[in-house]
Image (cartoon, rainbow, N blue to C red; front, side):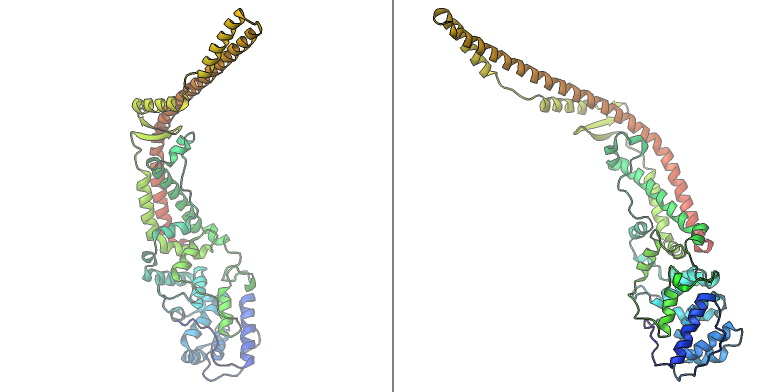
Length: 443
């Protein structure tokens, strides 16, 4: 399909003016203006007979003659113009079955999606052409098997972005560091991701979401001006077709559009179609997540507690690893101290002064007493530090034992929790598959 939506040959100004007024009227009220076309035909240019054919369709007259002339000049542009104009006016059911295929052309994984294809895609997704139009787009997408050419993780990240890497289950609330151990983290993270995917699929396929997600639907049943639409690409393409729009914006690949349509906050009609395309991938991911959520917790597990690795068994912490950790605590907690040489020197000097005072001057006795007192204070300080070290070591050892016992009970609680988690994951996987099977037709 051509990506150039410019008009080609220069048309008479009255053709442009009438086409512009016609589009504005269709977007506002969904019917042709009361004044009949008054412009002259331009040889070789498809727009004048295409406008005549559109007015004839809206007026209930036979459009065959102008339609034949327009199609003979540019069949694809004519079909695109009529399909979009009727969709904008809320009368997409009046298109001929062959027009949609002609206008849409062929999708390709190697080429960007054109603006015309995207606008038809959007119109069909919003029901402008009824169920047949939506099925037409679905078949076009199914034929390319887009999901087989894109990494599965891209679809998962698109539909549920920003997933946490660590999930702390209730049983490990007091030991959050244990939730990072791979053997315990994998089932919990898998169950949480599966629940989130189910929630997003339920959100996308919800009829209420589809009805309320678009403030001004493309079928224009409320006669809302097209300028108020959240997505005005169909009208922008129409304006470009009649030569009134600016240069076309950048185009994206098919996978880029589908991944963007899946992200939270995207148009729910487009999200429903993108979800249909991603269904095979999501089913496979759901099966893998369910299998991971059923993984049994190990009977023995080595966990970090107070910086020491303790082996936990069902009956309690392993005494060998616990004893090694206690010995490490004692070694690190008790500061090695040498002999109190300073205090011993002071005591010897003080005793010598006392002996000298008996034989000579009594003033020396005071110095001796001071030296002995200072030595006693140093020895008392040394004893206090040793007692503080012992209390610290005793507290650390007791805390380690309590944490090890608590971690064992937490593992028992985690094991009991795993049964409920596996059952819930199975329910989520079943419901996710059911929601995907409903597909965009249900929405």
